[in-house]
Image 1: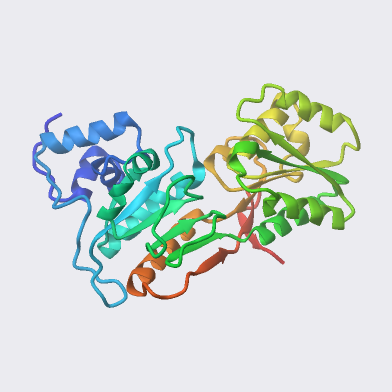
Image 2: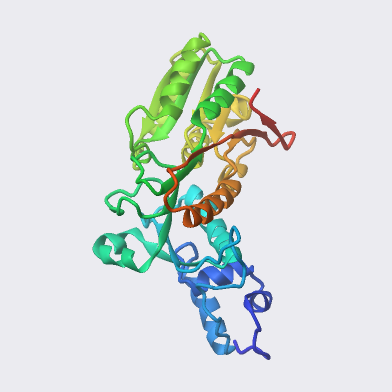
Length: 337
C-alpha cells in the first residue's frame, strides 16, 4: 500500500493504519508482543510512506524528576513461546511510560541476553517481569522487577502483588459463598518457588476458617485434568469452591468445569481467579476475579525506575500493590475489608 502523504509522527502513521500509536511503536521496535504479520505490515507501510522516526528509542525534551533522563533501558522479554497475560499487560505500558519520560529503551529477548551477556553493557538499566532464570546482573545494576522472588541486587527495585491480601479476598469470597471445601489450582511450571504464599496462605487461611482445602496442581500437558476435576467434585460435599492461581490457571479451571457441564453451577460465586484477563471474560458466567491492576503496576514500575536513575545509591525498594475484587455482575471493585 502506498500512502498519499508522508506521516509526520507516530500518531499520524497510526491513524492511517487504523491502529494505536503504541502498536506502531512496538512494531518499529520489533517487539515480540506483536504478531509477525502485524509488525511486518506496519514496518512495510512506514517504509513505503517514507516515514522515518527520529529514533524509535525516543529522546524527548521531557525531564524526569527535574533532571534529563538519557541512555538506553533494556526491556527484557521472557521468550518462552507461550501466551503470558501478565507480561503482555505490563511491558507495553512500561514502554509507553518510558517514552513519555523521554527514556531511550529497547526490547531484548532473554535467550539473546543469555547467549550474549555483553549486551548488558549497552544499557544503563533494565525492566523485566518475574525472575531472571539464568541471567546475571551486576550487583549495582539499576532496574525494576515486576513480580519475582529471587534475591535482589542493591540497585534493583521490585513491585509485586500483595499475596496476603489476594488470599484474603479469595478466601473471603468463598466463605461468603458458603463452601465447605475448596481447591487451589495452579500450573506446576508457573510456580518456581516452594511454598508460594498465594498457595500456602490460601490453604492455611481456609483451614483457619474451618474449610477443607487441597492443592490441585497440573502440568502444561495434562490430558487427565478434567477427569481429576470430576473425581474431586464427586469425592465429597458438593459445596466446593475453586481458586485459580492466575488467568491461565483460571482458563484451565473454567474449561474443565464447562466441559463437565458444571460452570453455571459453580461460577461466579464459587470460582475465584487471581487476574482480570480478557481470556476469562469469555466464560459465562464469568468467575469472580481479583484485579492486580497490571497497568497501574506498570506505571509505578516506570516511576520507580525514574527515581532509581536519579538516586542510584539509595537502598532497594519493595512495593506491594493492593488487589481488588471484581464481580462482573455489578462491575464494582471492592477493596479488601
